[in-house]
Structures are given as structure tokens and as C-alpha cells.
Image 1 (cartoon, rainbow, N blue to C red):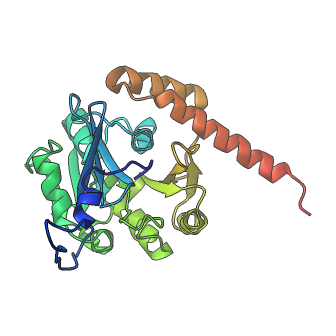
Image 2: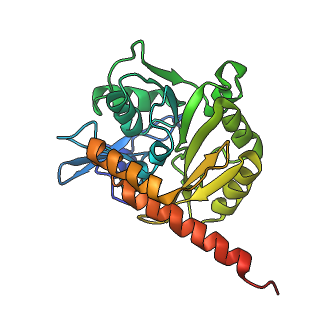
Length: 278
């Protein structure tokens, strides 16, 4: 979910049929709608807000910049064994992880069965196998299940509904359960709105749940990716830039920009500590 675009189906879903008004039952979920521009298909929930994207000629590529930033945990973990995605979207992160890390278990959690279906039929999601699991369930139920605690190297959360009023799960209890799902050195990445009241609430909850939280610079219309660390990281920037170069060579992701963002955050935090209080 980031920039606004008019869905080519959203208006059609609300218009009257030929000769008379269309009678519809209230859906359990917002309708899945699509738009397309320059070879990129966008997923919407019946409005102009983008919930995911796929470049038709590169179905396993992560098209949106904020979604690329959700992979910033790669800077700290070279050989992940298990990653989970809360909120499937177009499956961009799930597909990328499945292809890029052939040794890794990949889990996706999505509440809306229509999203799971459209990913399989239109967004080239591979069928579940011994490495790929897709669960139709509430993300809160997944993270609070003790069977899922301590098993993940990385956890990625992009939990927005059609109202786009911040993540639908944003409590300390949610982030505490997410932390519990991670291994001691595990990392969570979360898509937040920087210029929105929900940002402060989520950031505060993450700060209480994790040993450290770092936010990358905002992109697009204010999306901010926050990284929650179960163990406070040592930010060795020469080593991180070296690792970023390896990631870019292997994946073409702009990992150097992630390290620049980590450095900017560290500098801003240091300046805040030095600033005199009033």
C-alpha cells in the first residue's frame, strides 16, 4: 500500500447495472480491484490505494521501493532459514524470498481468501510445497501461536485494509508476539505511514517490544519501513556497505540506500541526544 492510483474496476463495482440499480450484499472484505500502467499491474481493495504491484515481465521482482526496503534484514543475515510475511498483497516479498533463498522455508499469512486466490491466478504465486506455506488466517492468531515462537529469522508485516488508517494490528501485544516468533537475532520489518497518527503509536509499541528499532527514510507518499531487532545490532558501516554490495550484485536490490538510511537514522538519534532539552 503506497501511492494512489485509480483502479480501473473500482468505479465499475459501484455503478448501477443496465436499466436498474445493482443489488449487492455487503462483502466480508473490500473487493479486489486492479489497475495497470507501463507493464505493471497494481492491486487495490476497491479504492485508489495500492496494496501491491507486479511487473508482468518480472513476476519475481519486488517492484515497489518500500517493499524492497522490507528486505533490509538481509544486511544482517546471510543465510536465513525461515521467513514469514504477514499480509500477502501481490506476493512480491513471498515470491522473491522463495526464489532468492532456495534453502529457506517461506511462510505467508493472509486473512482474505480472495487475495490468496488472486495471487495464485494473476500474480504468479508458486503453489505451496515443502518450502512454501500460505495460511489463510489472522496474523494475530499466527504470531500468538506458541508453535510459531522462536522459529523465524525474519518477519515482514504489511497489514493494511481498504480504509488505509495505519496497520490493522498495532498494539504492544501484537509486536511482543512478533518478537516472540523471531529467533534471538531475528529481525522484523514493518510498513508504516510516517506522516500519519498511526506512526507514533506503532513506533512506540515496537520500541517496547524489541531491543532496538530503526526507521529508514520515507519513500513515495510517506511509507516508512521500521526494523525491529531482538538483539541490538552493531552498526559496522564499512561491513554493512560491503554486505550491501553483495546483495546488489546478487539481487539488484538497492541495498546501499538501506545502509545510507541506517546511517542517517543513527546520526539523527545522536543529534537528538545532544540537543538541549527545554
